[in-house]
Length: 274
Image (cartoon, rainbow, N blue to C red; front, side):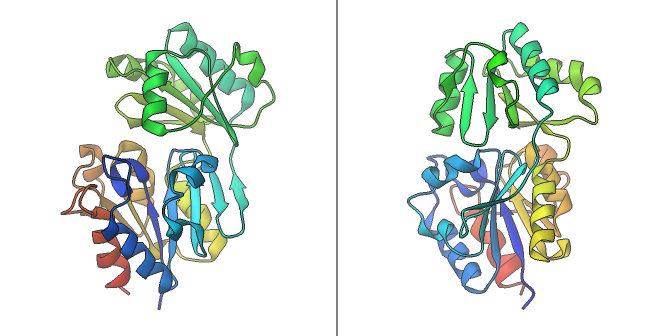
């Protein structure tokens, strides 16, 4: 058997619209892990919140399970409770982009390992909290972030995607070679270390485990999944996914996120494709 890794996004992919994992997905994951394959939860969410978000599903807490959080910036071995790699943002430059976003009245959420910060409990922040189910700490100034090992900066606008796009376009040149930026949702513009992406996280995990990239599979639904879809041996897009992702994938699922699309990919490319 060729041991394989499947990198799986959460929202819109593994999760149903109600933020649950359906039985078909659970059964497929259990079967592939029993066969000796690897599951990597490759997500924009913080690693430290995944234990709570996935607590109702024991399959995520045994051997051969890894969390790749903050858009792949940090890798975590679940069985060993151990961080295996981390790529952090340049602190001064991260604070600079945050200050520019705050000056333009964006709601901003900032991440480090173990904590999530914001500067005002705006309607956008409240919407984010209801979607993510994460605790967010209010701070008064970016000065409180000086020296912190930041993993991700998130700008939000639930009313005007074009405003986020304009900010991204205006600052892409100045962040080149420093940060990667991407949309993980129509309302979410994210910044991470230039050394990090979901694809880079999968590549680093594969190297850590001694598994060639041709033995990797990735499945996602959004534009921030493009790096892992294009870097994996097989890249699958959910049928409910973004058109830009579907344009670069190897396979589009028949089943959507509410119907067990991840189980379709596991059965086709890992269990039956062994």
